[in-house]
Length: 259
Image (tube, rainbow, N blue to C red):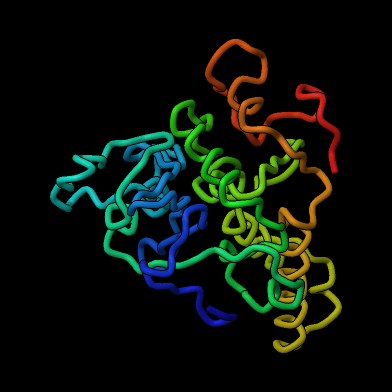
């Protein structure tokens, strides 16, 4: 692995690894946690419900398995599966390549990976904790799917770190969602673009704004995150399965100080 690619072979996987596979011509990647014995726990949605806009975006940002494939003998038909599910590695990859998400990278390495959703400055917890969180959420759910605030990458990052965003003022933990917002910021929101009229200057300003926005949105840098035990996430009020988005859990509700 390195700056150019995070591709790995199946034989290199270890329980607790955060893996992903690109979908739809590299537009979006689907993320999950490898738990061993060829199984992956991941967060998905039913067909047409990932974005919930009622537009073509619902099909572009599709993360569930390719419905045109014959049902897997091991997993059965998961084309309409939603929520936290367990699949064999082949069904998770859905014909795509296997990549390993990196934790604890340096700021320079993070910025060199121009595409979001491949690494973070945050440190991973031990593998046993990661598998425990994923297995617990498989039984109890992870709230409703939301492409910008509670998606498959948010799920995998929570399993790896136990961190949740404690405010509703921005996107969740997903590097992919942060990259979309960063790109929009670079294009339309920077007053610095008026300081130069040259093509090179505009490109430099846009790239700078994109990099800054991505960096400050990373879960390893943000100050609006809290460490939440999975048992509290699933049952914050003692009333049963959690139905709110985990990204909406507040520090006050859980009485856990932000770090």
